[in-house]
Image (cartoon, rainbow, N blue to C red; front, side, top):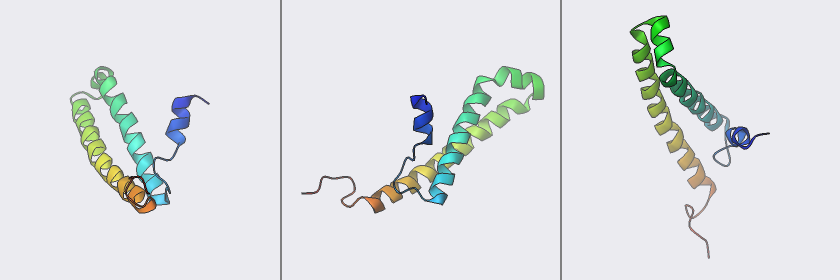
Length: 90
C-alpha cells in the first residue's frame, strides 16, 4: 500500500473514538472536495456558471470550520490520553 494511502487510513489521535473518526473522515473529505473544486474551477464554471466560485468558497469555509472542530477534539483526546500533555515524564 502506498505510504500516502496508509497515512490517510492511520488514526490521527489515540484513542480514536467513533465521533472523532467521523470528524477526521469528514475533514479529509472536505479537504479533498476543496482541492478538487479549486483545481477544477474552470470546468466547473463551464458546467454550473457563476455558482462554481460560490460553491468553492462554501467548501473553503466548511473546511476551515471542520478543521477547527476536528483539531480541537483531537487535541482534547490527545491531552486526555497522555498525562503531562506531551511533556516527558521523569
